Length: 301
Image 1: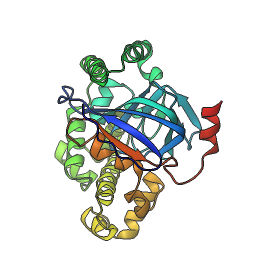
Image 2: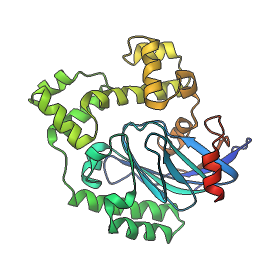
Image 3: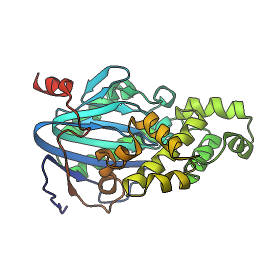
Image 4: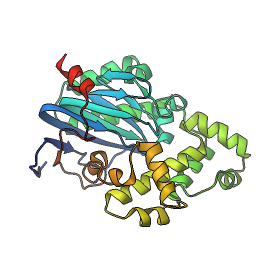
């Protein structure tokens, strides 16, 4: 795969994406490699998908809300607040799962609303076997194939969400979060209470919070593309700019201005929306603009 180098101060990350369309619906993957002389810290911006990290280097995930820290990878639920990755020797596979697919693949959607959990706790012995297969190759094409096969197998064996829940999620995505729960309940023929409880059990968030997350994600990417906060708030369904500000703070702990330049979003056009080829992206050493002694000390231990 061709690599396009971008040389600026800070770490350089190579990003690989599959060279073929995914055969498992609702699943996207990307691979990341970097060798930095100093630790690189990356604060996660919430996205309307569950994210699986499988690490082959020294990266660890830290959840500031719960104090949980884990090496080797993990699964991050919907709408996490204060989750960050830290590492110097980066070599990891990242998989994004639609919550509709994740319910069958992971089997624990209701336990993953905004939380971080070890991959092994969900897949048990399967996790160790898949990680060993992935460790045995450095080829991203092979890693993608191994991961896709495992996900497809788990999807076939897992329990799917109710069709009404899948429909409600699709409506939320299509409307960019601008659909009322009452309207969703009416469309699926359920009571509001029934939709609320079953959606929460199978997706991991309430329908209202899921819609807020999807709306925030659309707004965040609009900001990252250079649109003004005024235009984004007006066109994303926010009452005003202060409403957008509150959502940015709630989901990402950032102002709209800071969100627009968040390095986490900067990788999206390369890892998740670009054509299938590897590129090189430069990111600053301190991605959140602040020192993190915990990150440094953990990697030097």
